Length: 256
Length: 280
Picture 1 (cartoon, each protein chain N blue to C red):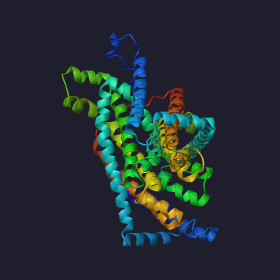
Picture 2: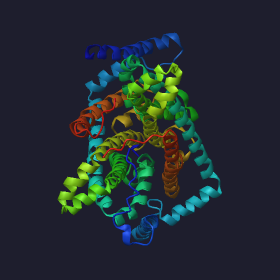
Picture 3: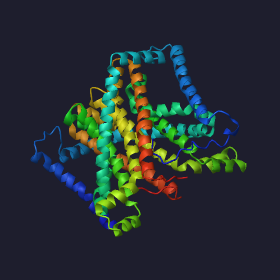
Picture 4: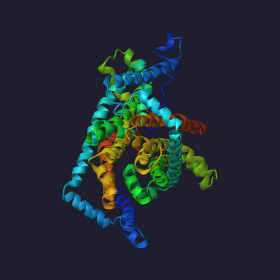
């Protein structure tokens, strides 16, 4: 079954590629609206040759990973701390919910004003997006741990780190990992959007700069790169992480 | 936000509430309001003490003033109506497309095998990346936004529907068939109800992405709407308006989530008598 899976799945790509090749012959499509696959390949070649494409990819990815680490590094401990104390959680929950609702992209203009157009503003938007997305999920995850388990762990005399190890992490693990993945999906969109509006480099910036000159080949190449990068990130990071943890422990079924 | 599957632990008042005479909800509400007011007070103090120009860091009072002007001149109501209308239309279209395709792919294994990789790849090209080329194709306006929102909603609905359909217990289908149901009846009586929790999960994920997508699309692909208001105000040095717009964005999403998504979820799930699988 595995053998004919790949060729079958490749078929639509081939069909789409052929349609793309033939489209300009069948309909009156100006080249600025739809570049040929050849143009895009040529753009890929020149981008790799002069190093501009790898540079942009590296800029975007490093920013995303940095934002992911900062945002989650702050949000998970804080979220756990907030969720553990009912008073603190009641106090902060509406504020956090509201800030999570605003979401990263709406912050872009303000970030550009405060930090100037450039990498700082983009990083601010990603961290903001990821932080609030994760803290919201973390608080919910920890609070959703059944009180019975909580009381059981506490009445057996667990304190401090033990509570964390025996109750919080296992109890909220599914939410935490699903939350990480969600935050990355939102963070990736926020990154591309922020680079387009307030960036000076990176893959999103390259796409929007090309739009202004109607260099559609660069735009399409950028879109393909964005797709490939996301598939790689998702597959290399999260599918593996889920398989190694929650799926393996039977907490979550793998979805297709 | 993730369309997560936890059932609220709100009913867990048993731990410490025994000795209290006030209901838990009142405590929640009071503390929550305190938190919000505290944040606003902190913001006001920070803005007054920092001495930074209100252009750079407007105070809550400035933002409240901007609100009043925006409402008074009728700018904000129009923008909000534009944004909401587009959002609802885009989400509706996307759900319809995703549901149709998802049911087809869920029922037909071979279709799923052939189209799966392409759909995965298309979904990976996030809507944010499509919007610039949409603007080249169609210029600013409604079409860009509607197509982008349809795109971002359709995929999660599609994937979750297909997965849920495939997970429908074979026995159920066989039994209903043995009882003489037509193919159509199998679909409407067995498969759709069984797949509903999955469909709703996909809908929630898509609706969340779509709202952020809407704001972004309005920033670079439209000349009106709340996203446009936020961006142009910042460009015109009206930072108080930008912040007012951001508050509107947050409020809108909260309202959509609480008044539209949650009740929808509740009604459909209760009506069909389904209980979501709780993961513990």
